[in-house]
Image (cartoon, rainbow, N blue to C red; front, top):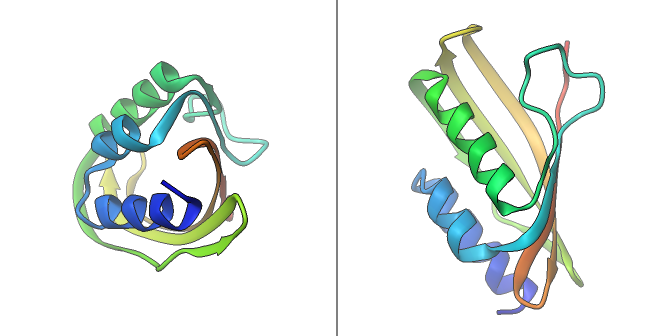
Length: 123
């Protein structure tokens, strides 16, 4: 798959809430996942390798009590990179209800996502 195809598939799966399927289908074994610097203690941080990314996703999902809404934008693609705006309004076990909006940036190599990085406000 080229970058546009990977981006379109990721968006489709995320809109359906199929995050684990997206990881299984679209991520390289050596992919990295980067969060914002300066996260508070106990927050889910960076992950290196598909197994760590899967575990990070599982921990995030297990912390959710209820999802009230969310959205995933269409991707913007440039060469081997694409970005997507995502939003979720959810109630978490450890934080209560908290809406989050972020820009997610991905790099594709050989038809697989090798890098994801999330940008969001921590105020």
